[in-house]
Length: 205
Image 1 (cartoon, one colour):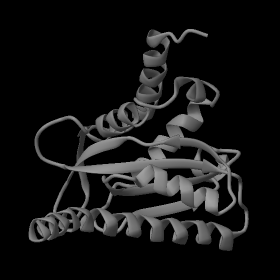
Image 2 (tube, helix red, strand yellow):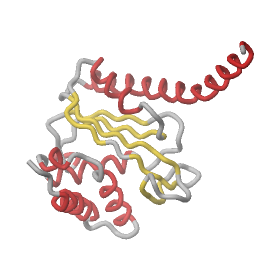
Image 3 (spheres, helix red, strand yellow):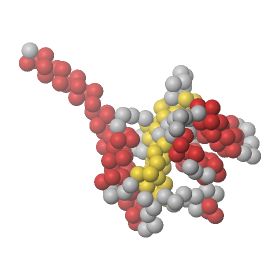
Image 4 (tube, helix red, strand yellow):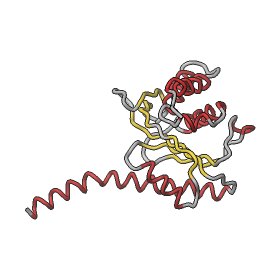
C-alpha cells in the first residue's frame, strides 16, 4: 500500500495537539513540541494501529521522565502503564531511556533486549536538542538539527514482551543501564584510541 504523506503528517499533528490538552503555557507548548518531534520519525503504520490516547500518554510519560536530566549516566525505567494509574495503557512492558546522544545506542539496547530473551515490539528513538538549566531541569526543546544552545539527547522508547514480576522489571532496567554505560565508555575511548593508533603507525613507519 502506498503511503500518504499527508495522512502521516496529520496523525502526528493530531497527537501533538492532543498532547497540548488543557495545559497552561509554556508547558502546553513544550508538550506539543515534544510530541511532534517524538513521533516525527516513527513508522506511521505502527502508530496508526494504536489508540490516540495511548500515543499521547506514552509521549507525555517520556517527557515527564526526562524533564530532569543533568547528563552523565542514562536514565532507564521499565514498567507496565495502566489506564487507571497512568492515564494510558499498553499490552507490552514499556522501557523508557533518556541519555546523552551517542552512536550505537539503539543497536546496543536491541541486542540486550534480545539477550534477555525478549521480543521487541516497537522502537521510537527521537534525538532532540534539549535546553536545560544548570540543575538539569527542562526549559526548551528543539529538533536535533537546530543550531543554538542545548544538548543533543536520546529518548528511546521500547515495547517488549509483558513482564509482571517486579524483580524482572528491575533486571531489565539494570541490564540496560550497564549497556548504556558500556556504550558511553566505548564512545569516550574511541577517538583517543584512534589517535594512539595513528601515533603507533607513525612510529612504526
